Image (tube, rainbow over all chains, first blue to last red; front, side, top):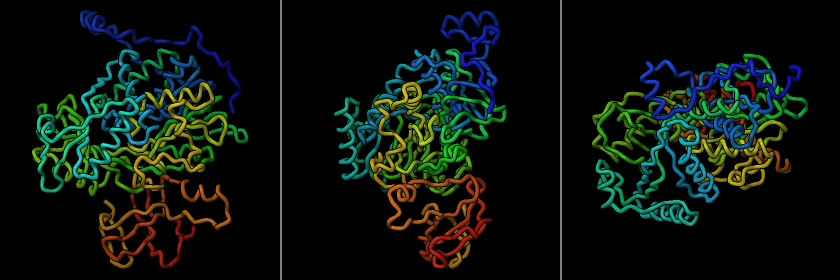
Length: 435
Length: 94
């Protein structure tokens, strides 16, 4: 292990380039000045031998945790270690949807807290993340499904979260492209959460990285963690491709690869890694101004600001660390799309890709201490991690700063599995491939 | 797209099969205690590499097969029937 360095390191000699405050005035000024006044949005930090907190993983959750540690809890002696460049992991590979229309009350509270943080995020970070609350609309196709959705909407409204029923007549106006009387699964109605929507995903990573860096956090790119150091049970730091880094607290925020990192510390998790595909079509004129989900299969779609339809479905269904999907799911998702929006049949798919998910055993995330003192886990996000970035970061930072769970995330502890209080949103049991 | 060589039906598309998870998980003895059962129900190795797993040939012979597959390349190296042994042992390593 490396010798202990002074823990408060911000010497005046250290380069602290600031990208300055972004504003319309600044845009005008830099435009007149030939765009020569801009600097990089965050410092390209090199890792120091010791930090108070080391966060492994520079994705949405890792960067948000670092930002809230510095900005909310006053802990700035923090490093975020990212294997590649910022923004190329799952934070830039998802379908960018935000919402809080969950069924389990503790999930509704947690994800709605996240939605509230999204609502003020851009002002707070001084970064345009293109938060667009265009509404998420869930279609239902049977009486039983209507009952289930009604129950969910009532649960949300009891908790003060917006949800409203939408009739078939109004659906015709909101989503004229949807074939309500399709022969396979006719649409009976829908439920709308107006505060749901989309956010530009890479801007979330960039915005948090910039704000965290400005608050004093070292955002270290091209720095892969290759080992986790332990002194007995206690985790004392990490080994990286750029040297050993000691830390009082190590936080794993590497969803998709949590099991691999935990294994370096000798820990086995209630998680399987699965691949989830996403797709983008060629750009067309505006045809869809909500996030639409199909109820008789796994299919969700929104239209990006560039005009492409961004859509996805379910996980491929078997353990995978390959960042690509297989054709059976590609076909299944396309079939669902054609059932609900046959008018899109002639659109070409421009891109298809896959991201590796931490599928937890109950379908809910994990923000928790671990059996190893000094090791905090943020993972198990299944395919719902993007929308939870602000709340996940805040809750993880709270856990690191106070040593106790954030009240809205206390149910997401690792112990819930042994104690039999799993948070099974779908009610399918401990089968990650079924969530 | 996986092509799984079923010992009874020959090589078939993955769409004929239903995935049933990690085949190395073994049910502990009845008196093993809560920690052992928690590990059995919830904890998984989740390897980035060779993975021994169950596949049910739902669209074919309906036999439960164990398959040794690589979780990054998806290469399938060995396939066997659950009839041969309930839980394959370590001798099916690649």
